Length: 191
Image: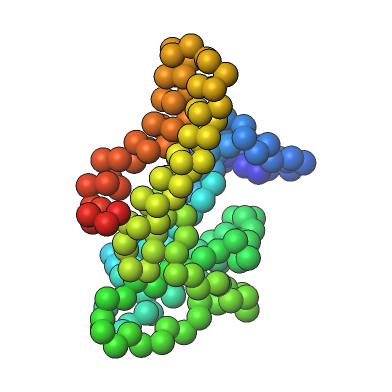
């Protein structure tokens, strides 16, 4: 490892360990390490959060060249910067609202095929290929409903009202209101 600032470069030092998972500095170090990893086309967007990177590509006129090129460059950049890509953890979602959607060729990285999904969870939000909010509303409702069981148990045990209120706010209300300004504003009546 070496530090490079302006025209000055430190001597190279070999590190035997990385930042432990969960370390407060890990996201900062990842951000510093990946600072120069940027999209090369205006139709692509690179989203980096903590230790995750997401490539969003706009495909126009059935031309996937820019998108696939960015994914290839990202894999090459990772290789040059001693970062390993775990293709087994990668997911691809294709959002296509045309009536006759063409079959998209599978995305491959170094010979491994990236799994194509109809939905996945991204930073706590369920993203689906039809961009509906159904999973984002049914999932928290199901989780909150499961936790109501414990609130009923507290009531049967004659827990004081302030304790029940604190339990409700911490375990049920927090689930229902998480992301409410984003999620529930776009919900349909059925959601």
